[in-house]
Length: 368
Image (cartoon, rainbow, N blue to C red; front, top):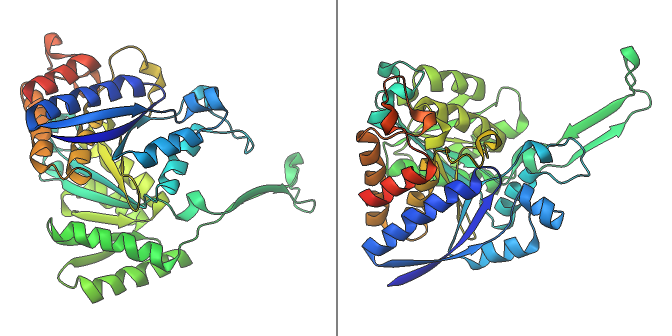
């Protein structure tokens, strides 16, 4: 029996509720496939700020580095919301752990479960056949560049403004672009063989470098892959108008942050979208959604994105393809049987088929 150490980061809001269901499913997988999971829980985000004064305590980072994989739920909440650059924010924990673990590749699959086709706000003929993978560069760009706010004595404007200025630096190195491009082409080689590279090369110098490097990697090592350049504003439109045309989408950090949430809505609910962050260190798996503080503690959160993050963990960190396929089949079966959490129900869903967070986790575990 193989034993794996999983570092659990429940975080804030609905995080503790949904991560418990992820562990429930992992334990069911272990019982069926002869695997064992040891869990180490640590603090991140707002709860870490309250307990330790910082969003990513050193003990959390040590636990993550020592683990075979990290399962994270969600961070953030209004009580920690601030624009004061000197105060910690929960998101700093998420950005920090990605950077410290060298997790430069974020994979976000966007697939349509046939049972949930009506949950999308797009027409059925638009979402038919949607199966795409967003490959987002995760440790460079605007989110990690130099930033500053300061006063410019000569910059005071009309209306009594006091002359504040601010800047954020968007910067990419050639090797950062090369390695994420390679990940995208490798993913496409196992899928339908098409990569859309998203940039803003008509305006930004970083995007011009991005395009040059992506083409160089393509021409040298992946000429059999179809490569399509697309400006980010056009990509935002095309993801809604013809999402089924996309196979692999590769882009820089901020563009990827925005486009992946847009693509997630094609499925009808962020509560169904998982993600994997891969790179040089321990891989991290998390839902694409936030902490949903408005429903925290009510037991109604959708745990399926967390469960599908477990599927990705089994696939990418533990090389357990059969177990990962089982999790996917179990989720599909539960949905095909008509079970729904509140966020994915529709007007025709019978009341006795609407379940809470723990009950949905039970159903998936039972189907396993």
